[in-house]
Length: 112
Length: 119
Image: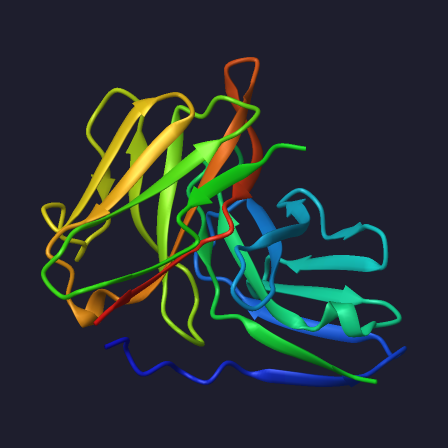
């Protein structure tokens, strides 16, 4: 059968509050980072990306922060909604390279 | 927007049989597609890079004779799980990048995944 899975870290947030999901990436040479949202039984969905020449990028209700010194990414979701409940993955690659390495993922649970 | 479609979305098969999963880029051409495997509560693990018109490149530890990849056109890659066993049960996901001016656009598009259950 399938491998026994690890338990994803879970972040529980009250609806309307802000969420912060953190990720440590592995390759200091990576220059392009992406956050994906994955709902149960579906493929990853692009949320926001950032290149290594930036330390912050904002989208609609989402902000990504990049700290290259400590190889850390974070995804901030403003005014979290029930529809934001999903597993969030960070991914690293080289821009234009197409092949990405995914982080371990964080499950976001929004409490109505 | 660009769409990547996978078929079937789920499949159940008997141990020892082979299963083919298709990945199509619906409104763009993709010279390269990627196949990932995801076990429950785990991340996506890259299995192989599918190259149009040439052999696939497999990640370390992935058996190329077990997971056959064919990328016969610019819009279709197939993954065949040969002689499937219960440990092959997993969620298989493909991705592709739309080309812009002959170069990867930088944005990956993922399929919806194919759930394989081997009895």
